[in-house]
Length: 472
Ligand SMILES: C[S@@+](CC[C@H](N)C(=O)[O-])C[C@H]1O[C@@H](n2cnc3c(N)ncnc32)[C@H](O)[C@@H]1O
Picture 1: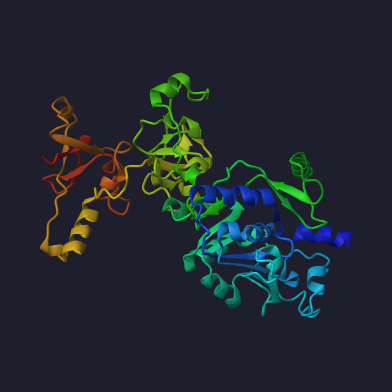
Picture 2: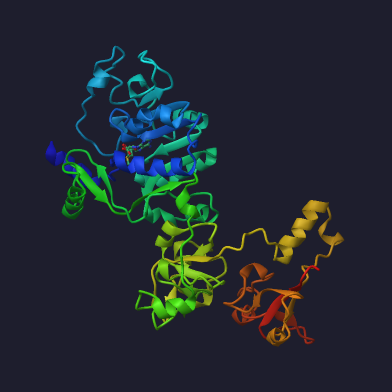
């Protein structure tokens, strides 16, 4: 039997990783610290669980009253449907009940519900959990579990890693709040990154770099180094450490409102602890309009254009401090939001010809909602006042002036909106990005503002400073 298990663990994509109680407690406490009523009056669903021994069910059932829950629902996936085949033995909890059904035990999922005091001790706790067999195997995609999802307010679980993309889509289509575990690699999945960029989902409160230990079924092959690491963290036996797991959520927590304390560019040049920055400074990418910042703690506080940072930045990301502009094209076509120079032919970011690892592009947050782009502004006016495109001309009031304007600049009279120059400009100010379908010299045309010449051809101007008259 042991050999069969080993073979299974090797061949099947193993989804059997059981979350530890302290990890759940630490993460959920962070939401409660931020909002003590976050779970009050809520129905929490835990799909993809094994409620008979799950620490998720245990934690939420034990703290039912403290959290002020309305209802707790936890469902399991039938052992006969699991990819990883292990010897099956129903638990005593199941066999001791009058409704135990040997035929259903392996092929049907179970539902556990906690809603009221059943034992009569005037408390609602784990002793009051009631269970039934589900009609089906408990697949989260089934109609039965979808219905439970639709009735729930918050979904909390560690879903199968192999179905992570599908699971997130399943939550998002129902517009539910959630706290789930996934792999850090999912950050750059093309289905996940756009949600992170739009601040529809974010990382949980527990750090990115924390080692999480998971229980595994008897017979699972665990790398010696992971087993040793789990043992060092106090977990001896059927455990593994997955160094690349983290929490994903769309529930607010305090960590995402703690801005990073950063030094200016000049201070980094003088004092950075990184030899790559100290006395050296920053380099621009060859093929992206952004500055390479290889370490999150080396982000300069006074740089307003785009910066490329490692993915681990997300662990420290506060939407109050930064906006996410995009990511390298190697993570998804179009992800760079126009920062990429396609003529380079290389999707990964290059610094002096050398490829750097995945990068996310960020910029200091300006508070959003600033309708700088003339098309956005026109659409806004049309939608608000009911004009058609032909009926109105919209002027942003923004003017492009030579750089020598700065010599005469008086901040009481004008505000500087930005710069019209590749690499220095705000991409939102651009009303046109030329592509090879427009002109052969499209890349040059994108470098600075363009004007039509009398000969009917487009020409570049010098870089321009974009200014607007201040409201008096
Ligand atoms: C990563 S484990 C986590 C288990 C438990 N939630 C915990 O954290 O201890 C994911 C569980 O989902 C189950 N699973 C796999 N595919 C599933 C599906 N389509 N629907 C529901 N559960 C599924 C797996 O068998 C596995 O037990």
